[in-house]
Image 1 (cartoon, helix red, strand yellow):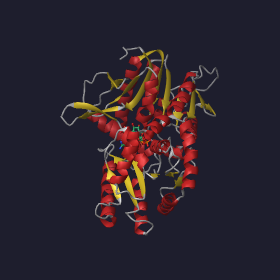
Image 2: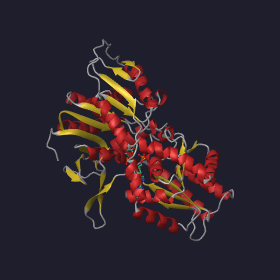
Image 3: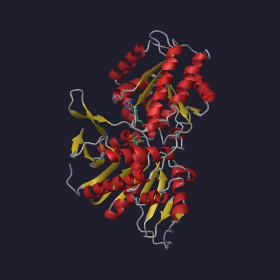
Image 4: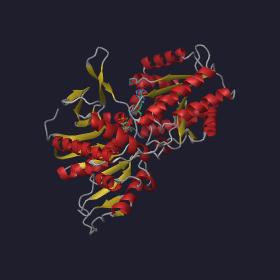
Length: 479
Ligand code: ADP
Ligand code: F6P
């Protein structure tokens, strides 16, 4: 573990790659945290000699920096009040729904905002303490949008990058936020602000011009203090080769066969893998699938739907409601359509190691990814990476960032249940040639644009970050 002031790369994210859990024997241990952010950053930290500052979940205090599986981790503690107001409140009750097209209604509470400011301050102070002179600090995601500005004021020598893993909303939605100006100014502390899509970068620059009044030109913002901030898209990806290698292993192939046997060897296996989140469109996709059985297109002997749904943010009311709704729907569908030993939907809440995920992908003929809005969706890319025989079919929402790259998927509008039914049926019935043609093209994209290429592109751009712009710009107007 580097001493204070010695790390050349500091990753700052709300989550550490591991969560504090109580093991079966009652002792404390660690478990891989769920979500796309961890999947993407872990290989980057492995390739560089850096530290990762983040929260290990829970409210345990006095956690010390530690090494885990070769990674240097610096745990940030959180009080029960901060978990409630910062994590469940402002991060996941305000920003998450606001940034995902207001799929659920965001709540605005001043005490949540105060907690957000306080936690961002602490994360920034920790990064300032660990970073060496002139180091690179890479801040991640919507929970920490104020860190760049606070860190800049503490350590002007640092090169600061920020990456948003979720969509950045259009001005029409963002401006609902009572603290919109503070968030924009927080992000402007970075030299480079990265987004999943071009649209997000454009939304940001437009908002900075309109709401903060800074001069902008294309993807650049000129600040009165002489700094230039760049906003650009860097679509995130996965360790595609690693997933393919895993998929090719004998152990995973065998496990995939066992999974299919355990499902009763149906002709086709449909698969969904998501955090249990209302943005993911789980309810609508299961309804679409069940209606295909009701309409007589196929039978439970022909097809089964495996839905893996890891519980997430369980203390947030909307997530609890969603879990109950899906539990009820699955019970209903299986009660009405299942037969003994043949449920229509095989529903699992478990969290799995990578090998098991790869085996699930290998066991699935049709991967169904139908979010109402998603920054990228790494599950879609993971599935594609494991289909090394150019087989399998991907049904993908047009509203997932991944749809921009995976154009050969069966693209669907998740709000249109009939449209989804048609796409599921087409993917089910597609011949080998059609599936192969589509998968081959998608695999080429995913293997070429992997997580290493994503991180290299971001870090290279950050290293090239412009110095003083030397332009005369007016000071920001106060609103
Ligand atoms: P999000 O970041 O919103 O959760 P993504 O699809 O981008 O969505 O990323 C999810 C990541 O979490 C993927 O890498 C996926 O493999 C992993 N994951 C999802 N569900 C599970 C699970 N049940 N067990 C293990 N890993 C999971
Ligand atoms: O990728 C989106 C994301 O929200 C990450 O920021 C987060 O780490 C992950 O999904 C899982 O969510 P949480 O950290 O709230 O469990």
